[in-house]
Amino acid sequence: MIIEYIIFGILLLVCVLSIYFDFKENRIPNKLILIFIVISIILQTICIVRFYEINLLHYGWCILASFVISLWFYVLKIWAGGDTKLFFLLSLLVPVSVYNAGGYGSIIAIVIIIYSLSFIYIALESMFLVLFGKEKNTVSRERINVISLFVGWISMFSIIGLINNICIVFLGKLYSEYSTVFLFLKVMIILIVGKYVSKIYLPIRIIIILMYIFTFVFFIYGKTVFTFDLKDFLIVSIVFALRIWAGKYNYKKIKVDELKKGMILAASTVIAFLNSDVEGLPLNINEDMSARLKDDDIEKVIEWSKSEDGCEDIYIVRKIPFAIFIAIGFVLYTVRTLIWLNT
Image (cartoon, rainbow, N blue to C red; front, side, top):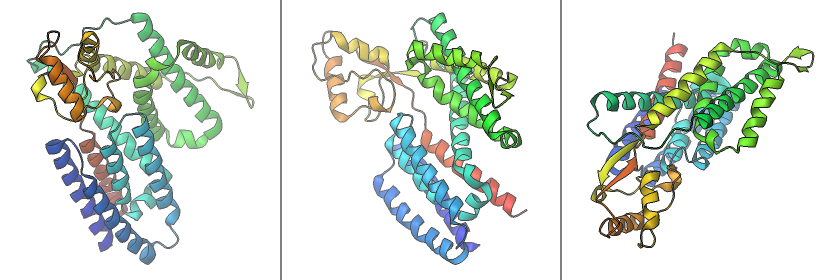
């Protein structure tokens, strides 16, 4: 239908504009988001009223899922506020027929594409820095705690193993039929869990590991809960190793006068502020969206650089351009589904 292609055209326009503003201004204007939310609601309402009076369930579920997931990622500080609003806006601009064809898992599939692309970008960027990077000090100088890494790896594998076994018991045939979808979903869970597993209290991680081990011998509803999935083992190992490796090249050395609003200081730089007499310096060492610099923070850092304890060079966390991955994720999924519907 023509109206669906118009909606898809607007989706492409929003993607181009959001990528442009993200790179130029390091933010996506709220006015742009608001205008296109109104336009999307009007066009989708016309489309639904005229052609999809009885097919609202999938669309409504996907919009609700996009709101919950985008808000959840914002709370976890994975995305900034602009990325969260962009994700929700683009979910409104996906043609209704795409959601009807993709079913309830459409938004999950889009998230998987987005997160997979971002992880591939991090890995390739790290590889590029290893081969061609001119900065010799991009590698983190922190010592690697082997025991902590081992416990983290075992914890991640145990979490995925438990999820795998629960899916086998309670989803049964559905889990086997959509094994590829669940495989990508588990990869996304691994990527998210890998970021926060080190923050889980050690006793809780040990309990998770023991729960997984106990599935060797316990039965639920007469079925053996434990299964050892070699794919899960390999995925967890590869992703965990890549995260450690990529993390070494997660920082960029810049001059203090190059600081911009929204940048995130490396923890090592923030720690250097602790001995300073300058008051009001940013002291957030989380290296996530909660640590994004404000104008006042930049002024204080500049003041610190001119003090006796300060220096002109600092480290920041390399920016992951989530806006472009969000845009590509929605476009790829929509194009693939529209092609499938027309073949």
